[in-house]
Length: 185
Image (cartoon, rainbow, N blue to C red; front, top):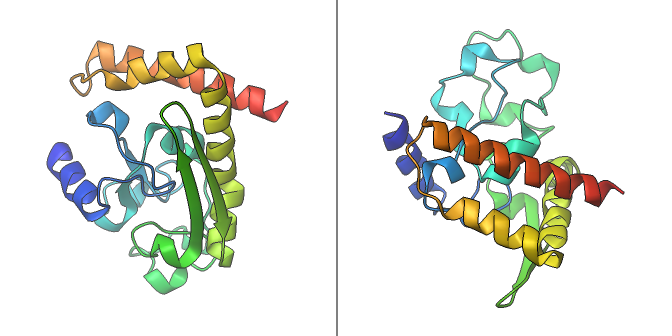
């Protein structure tokens, strides 16, 4: 069921991350299902159709369990309506192009992305996530060994839930965290 749902959402998102719009890699490990309203704060929506999307590993890890929604969305009977999401970008309800502009320049060896929010929701997404994603991309591209290591990890096609998937996710997370630490310096 999880795999079928992921394929459905991937197709709907045109095989791009719901937040940064980078291409999704070809393994389930590299395309985690994103809980838009985090499970920790909104357990009642853990498996709600409109609360699930597909993100890249970077966006999913960086967002983690951060709650971008206003507290008025907690303890509701049903999932909030699309019109209720005025304080945050909701990838299933909002059209990315209406909220964020980006430019991506890619060469054989490097990729640089610049994001600019054009609405309050888009500006918040840039502030909370996309600026860090773009900065991490620069750090990784500037370090050939780090870039090669992360690309090697992302190429593995592993069985979801396997020990190898857990190990690769942990290693990728550690490398990603280190790049973000360097960015913050």
